[in-house]
Length: 131
Length: 129
Image (cartoon, rainbow over all chains, first blue to last red; front, side, top):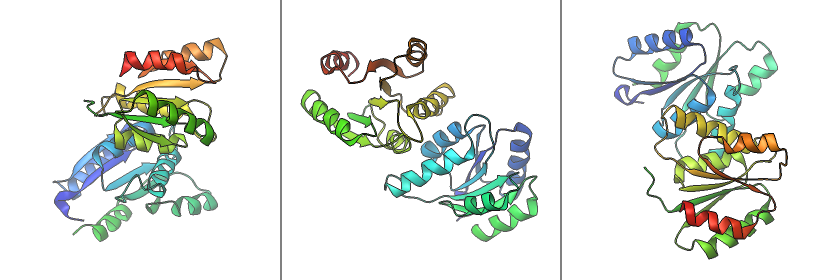
């Protein structure tokens, strides 16, 4: 992934956390584009309309959780409607090991990081992906 | 905006879907038809094909038609969509309150009973296509 091609999508209902994620990404990659969604429905719309290549996904959100976002991507690729595979980083407060394991196996999920986010963990991941 | 001549049918029951397809092929031969067997596939197809009109079944296993309406509504109200589909909801729900709620949903132009009265649908299509 080239630095100037980076397009992030942050799906997170907590505005404070969204701002923290955003500032962190802007500092790391000043040229990147950042899209923000405050729920899974907005996340789905923004994903299909803008095709971000890296997605930070919160799992527990009111009404529509992160699960539905993973479900729709999985369905889209299995039916060959979607072609490009984004990199999804799930950032979650879920502590149950089995649940975390099963999220980790989901389509396009590259990493599951516990919340509150340790930024160095996310930075290490992104450094690996970005040229 | 919408310049597509695409129609999308979202219905989980294959026989019912085939019946709808058959009907649309006769009534709207100049439109391209797309079909989805569940709500998730239906949403993916909506974004990809930007259909002018969606025929949406409400009661489906796992994700129901409500999920499609929720996502579309959020996208339209927050101005995130580059297209505005007209949605015709098809449902066997007979609770009056629930039906009223459905007609108020964003992008829904009509709520039709199931089994679908094809003559009424034909009239409706003349209005919306």
